[in-house]
Amino acid sequence: MTSRRMIIVGMDDTARLLQHIDEGVATLTLNRPRQFNALSSALLADLHAALDRLRGDESVRVVVITGAGAAFCSGHDLKEMQGAAPEAVQALFASCSAMMQKLIALPQPVIAAVNGVATAAGCQLVAQCDLAVAADNARFSVSGINLGLFCSTPAVALSRNVSRKRAAEMLFTGEFIEAETALDWGLVNRVEPAARLMESTREFANYLKSKPRESLALGKALFYRQLEAGLQGAYEDASRTISANMGGEEAREGVDAFLSKRPPNWKA
Image 1 (spheres, rainbow, N blue to C red):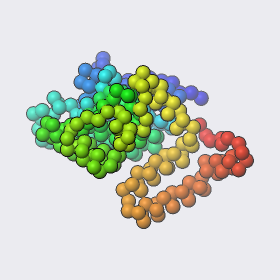
Image 2: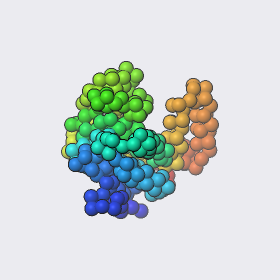
Image 3: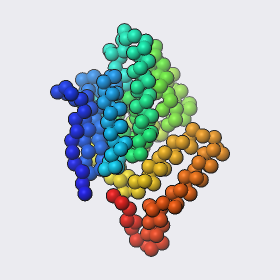
């Protein structure tokens, strides 16, 4: 059974966030192209609401995040932050950090489809998604240092994606890297011609849809837990997780199918 529906998040004529669900793939489009999709407090609130809904939507198997216009995301909205009270600035950064953590908490895989420039918190968003496909004209930077503002929160996600020396270089210099460099450094999984970005991302999403839902969700949660644990704790957690997985319906079906030399018949 297919699921096709369009949901617009935001009350004004130019909604800040577009959500399109098509056959199990939810695409969230940051829709502030004139502001290069900067993460205002309102857009962050829309992202929180969308992620909360998607977390409980079993019809959604994969989530894609992309940007409208020429940019993926230029980071935080500096105009909103300029002159704001310290409490408001702290609340904005806390909201962004909580939203990034919701991406990890989602049971569905999340793919960033990087259609253009991704800077500061925009680069953080790419790094925080589980997977990333970049257009060949995409560029990445954590450029806050050039404004006297070290990209501290983007550093958390960036340093968990690329090597320490490369993360430090990006953070300390604020210089841009091209899409192919981002691929080489491990910030993105694939680079595609800009004209094929969404088509290629959809193909990637469809491939992930073919995997068993519950096992993928269980594995995603374990993947992030073990990254933050010591070696012994990681193996203990992984052993418990794979044992529980082995006793589940999806693994039983997968093993039976393999031994019977037939395709597995997992629940849609």
